[in-house]
Figure 1 (spheres, helix red, strand yellow):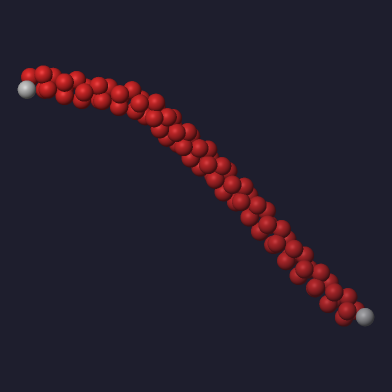
Figure 2 (tube, rainbow, N blue to C red):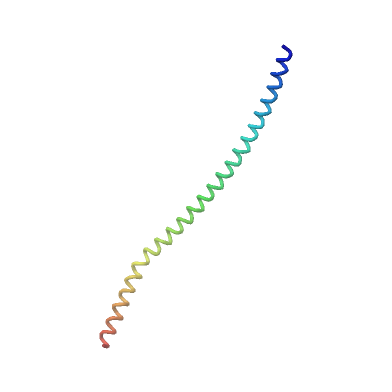
Length: 87
């Protein structure tokens, strides 16, 4: 019976050590995961700001293209009329 108590005591110690190692490893892994998730969040926010900036630039050019095209068209027509009157 004494031998069984020694064996169960050793088993208890080994299992306790394994549990402590598992818990420490899990805590470190969770801390690293939180760190990685925070970095990904910052990266996503930066990408969103860049996308918003690109969208604003695209809207600006879309709004300015209409008047610019009209100005070019009027310039072309005016140049054509001037050349036609001279010739």
